[in-house]
Image (cartoon, rainbow, N blue to C red; front, side, top):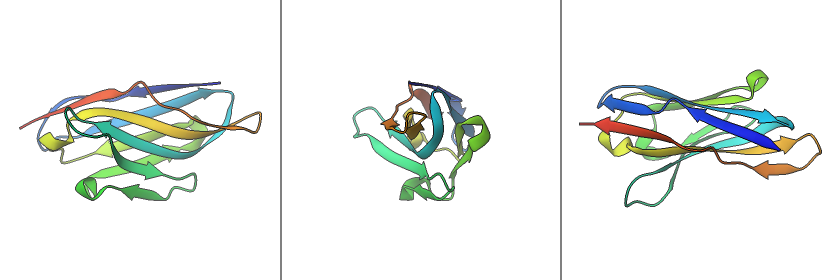
Length: 120
């Protein structure tokens, strides 16, 4: 149905920046809402940011002012720009889009995850 490819994770020092990408391909019409989750060791999975098809965004309080979600609808790609990174931002980040498929159905996908490590 659809393939999701995440990229952009890595290792940075505190205060650094990373940009995550989530590209979707396959039999899709569009990406509706895209959610970004992170899973830190020993912690519950956390919804970090979301962006709707119309570009409306929401963020968990801990990343407001530092993270920015954006999207390129023509490329079926969604981004998460992460600035002023903190050690507590460390974790595996997953993109989870709600996809509108060409057959008219919808499907919640999940990327393979990308590791973000922020050193103090």
